[in-house]
Image (tube, rainbow, N blue to C red; front, top):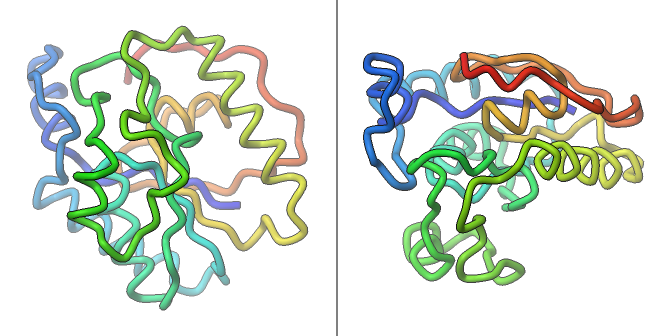
Length: 185
């Protein structure tokens, strides 16, 4: 499968400049983030993707949209691939709000408040990544899946710190990681 980190968000822009949480809940992509999403759609067009899974955060849905449009695919929303809850940006939008903004996507399988209400311990993120890895490994056709996710989730899956808009291949049949370094990039 391919893991794609969402494009630059309003949070990423401010946090990288100040190293302080700017207090933006469920931030949207910046103009650069939209460019990164379009560039990813172009780069991924020839990768044989037949399934797109995205985190319910707006920045991930906005990143998945150009790929879905280009390939004529529907985006499946899966909260398992969400970011580790540690900053204000990890406060999501309620399902009713997401459904109003993204009426063509299905949020009916999710709780109205689908993100944790307090910081998520590293071991819980690792367990969530291992669970998703297991679910993907059980599929016959996981190799054609694009997963639009986040820094912390991709780190938990691969041990790699990825920049915004970058992607890599991940084999879910390989053993899950047991620990990673959580030092923020």
